[in-house]
Image 1 (cartoon, rainbow, N blue to C red):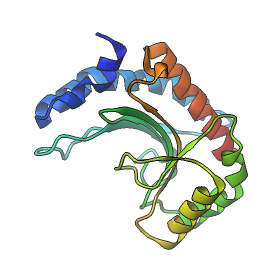
Image 2: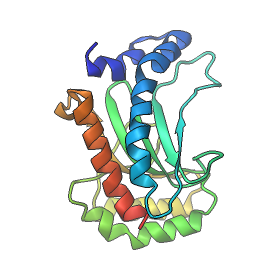
Image 3: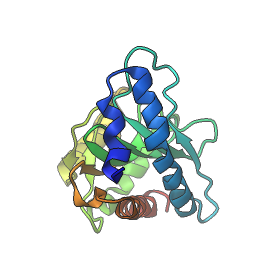
Image 4: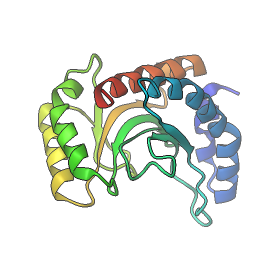
Length: 197
């Protein structure tokens, strides 16, 4: 089986149980490898990140449109803290540093996002930006959209900020597993060197 098929073929199934079965058989094993590569990067300098592979436990009628592995500092869950998320839709791989709606220490996160704006904008590779983890659209990051996204996150309870990279299914970086793991590691390392320092 080609690596792209391993990553994306589950989403060809429209039946919820068939899709979940293929996610467990094909996509989750890749996420297990990601965990082995990413935890050593994140858990330097006395940091303690934990990994969470999406289980889709409440999916009974509608199949999940995407799936992911997340890394957060809270061992009971990741959505209430800034976290790293690596996952796939049917047509893309996403690598996000995510600030979602239910973060507990939101003001502290906003302050850090403001302080670290220059570092994100001046990253050695172009980063992408999204404002909704359950939607596909993203833009290339710039000063204007970064500032506006952080302002929205400050003002609107349902706003989100996601910073990272997106690779469409036909991108050459997804030609094989080794290349994909390399770009995942490079991206998470770059994001963590900004966020966790």
